Length: 196
Image (cartoon, rainbow, N blue to C red):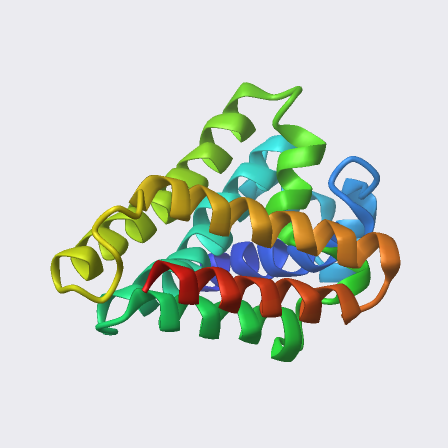
């Protein structure tokens, strides 16, 4: 990796960490520069604006990570319900980066930027649709294999899973406790049993 590429990646990673804790709107370019220890010139060499940097965080960091966690895990498991539950459990209970008090990075971006910035809305919608599509396709395959009831509506299941995850991350943030995650996971397991 070239030095300029490494500098750009460092800016994105450190900025993402700051934004996750403080929020996009309240994180300044000066804070990002101080945290990354790059010059102002180096920051503006890579990004003309903070919004451009935010969109790069979505496309260069969040999207590949999102794909690895939420989509690729569905590819090699015969029962998608097991995969989905395992991913949810890991993200809510075991992931060291995702802190209960800060919620879900993607959901935070949606709440902070989507209503006011079309490019953010489009980029974040693409993430969500990719996840929904992967879930729906894997549930349809499981229906064909007889793992999930034929009458189950794959898109409804997908939307339920996605909205439940984002919602419980917000509840956890409000309560500053993982207790609500356990309630959600128990309910998710019961719901999945009803689909089999």
